[in-house]
Image 1 (cartoon, rainbow, N blue to C red):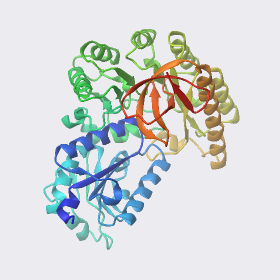
Image 2 (cartoon, helix red, strand yellow; image 1 turned 60 degrees about the vertical axis):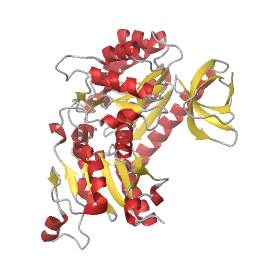
Image 3 (spheres, rainbow, N blue to C red; image 1 turned 135 degrees about the vertical axis):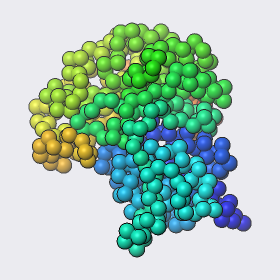
Image 4 (cartoon, helix red, strand yellow; image 1 turned 90 degrees about the vertical axis):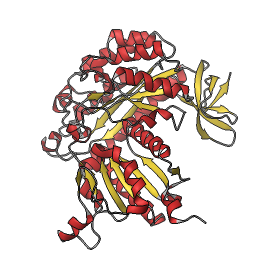
Length: 460
């Protein structure tokens, strides 16, 4: 029979949002395991549930709140720790939710393993916690509601001077495509984006630490590693000894044995002839670029405070396609930005139709508190925003289908993933195609596949 102490030693983690939050969650998972905590089979059996939140849209906030409610209903005894970007932006909102034990901002994520380690014996008594801690006793004296809000551990994210990454993150708890966050924060101030408020200024992991991290992950069994960041192309600009993303990628290729390296999102201005030549020059670099567009209208790009125009964006995409004809090229697009006219939207559709993009990530505009976009005028009707988002997603599906069709019959190298069906295993190609190969295969294995015309791909 499992006792309280054993129960509290078990944990589960749910991640919301981008690859940077996924990297944070993976690092925390490794850190908790290194501290002796045991991963539970799911939230229902966990003593502690950590929710690593996103706040890029109102929908992301709502998903986090609903997750808290659902987990608390299913497992009332679980201690729920909410962290991530939503926890940094609006900790009081989350602290008020029934079932939440702690709210920990991005500024104090490094404290979570210590907090969880103390929960079985110290319960909620954390009067010695560092940072801007609000104790239950203090809240009670302030005439808080009958159920006092959970304690909050959050501080000034702009005081972070380095990328926070635990050494245990290099242990590759999951050896199938681990994410290594080498950059955090952003110095740009796009009018719609809340991320600088919750991630802070741009900061980079030193090149030596990046190379060592990749080496250790590869030695632990990882065959593909994803380098991630909030503004990955800005890597190294904050370091005393100036470094660049291209420079650290070259060092990884020269000094480690990693078999495939993939990069996350890169801004258009960082897509140069030299950088694309580097990506095209090694079969160990995945031919995959994700280049945020946001809008195909120059007037909307100005309102968004983006620093390029559609002509510049198109030029960079064509550089990629000339050097890497079979590369995946994805883009983020926002539907329904304030002031977006029908002509602006048609310009976005037209630009995407003309460009050799292979997939889209579509976001319905969501006003974020504290961002300039909230004061740009009357919001578009919700029905208009949703209609435009549907049209963009439909165009994105057409682009993906055309790209897959162009590669039918080609032999591609794919890495097996964990998802399986009765007679198939999912795998991912270098150019970001998810395929199903016949048979049941262990994850993290290379397979040569011939891309078929349907959902199934033949193993070569």
